[in-house]
Length: 111
Image (cartoon, rainbow, N blue to C red; front, side, top):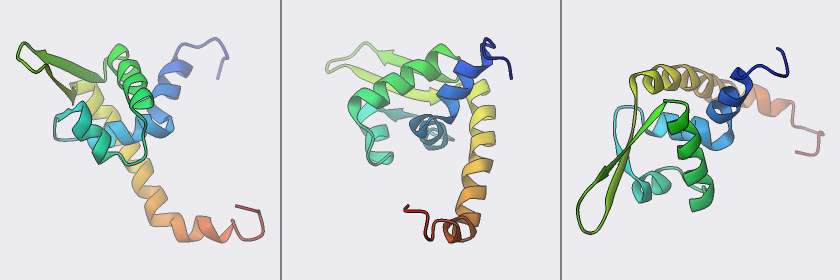
């Protein structure tokens, strides 16, 4: 809970809007950048690139560049990333299951 704890940065990267979706999308498969962007609707190129850089720096995503023309880069989860994806998937599934109950609270709140 300390403000200076480095885990806060990792938590921010993993649980950001796009971090969760990238981790879930990469579960069980590798993607090229454009494929990943299509799989995660609504993410800008800039935000996807930044999120991938964060997750790669945290050791959760592996970026593999192939020496071919045109350039070919793929992203996949590392073993650590697989563990992280399993955990954020549980949260995402819980939200999906409980969305009707959650939405009941939106009534009258201006959402």
